[in-house]
Length: 235
Ligand SMILES: [Zn+2]
Image (cartoon, rainbow, N blue to C red; front, top):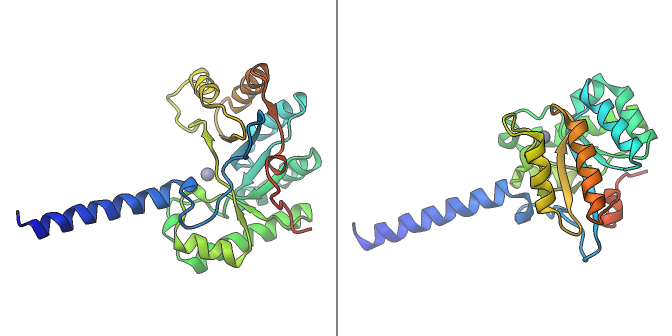
């Protein structure tokens, strides 16, 4: 193979690898400055839940959080929020933070253009405002994917993007809740932003077990806004 072709191939592989890293690793911060973890060495962590509200599991998760006096953040899918406004109102009433996780969360979301993405974000903001009276500032991209179109929509809507530093991988059905809990505990670190899903099977027992063992290890569970000075609502 001629040297120039070889060099071009290596360059192409490097470029593709960088593109993958930039898009699929939200903490790469290539396209958006996502908040992914608190700074400092204090043993404080925040819990975040994606993809709700779910008609069966969310209320149970909220029960667990209330029982343990934990305030979490919920990144809501606009269409689902519209179908279950009572759960959204309960979140806010009980002191949790709500943010946007797009309107539809379809698999094609990362491939949409900036106009479509911006429209999804604005519609979700309108739905959440109609339910709670609050204008949300926080956005977590579906699948954690960022790209120039997502970045443009985030800028246009003046959103603060939120990522994570510790992921439960709780959407994988074949992995036992106990294994997920152990993995979370292994990965615990000061300032951790923990990603969970309140739509998942046994989400309530998973989060309850995690809260108890994290506290045993000396971690305090605080609101996302206590890990960092991020603006949560416009009003
Ligand atoms: Zn999601």
